[in-house]
Length: 61
Image (spheres, rainbow, N blue to C red):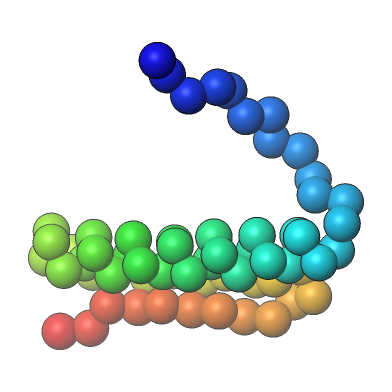
């Protein structure tokens, strides 16, 4: 049995939105790290939060 389809829409609750952002941000950074490590690729990731705060990741050799 497959997973149900999730409707993507803005999270109205500020606290829930911030928690979701933090979890997804860390997941994206982990995936960027794994991609650079497993595929020997140079990866750069730039994320701006809703408040304009910068989060970045770049692979270096």
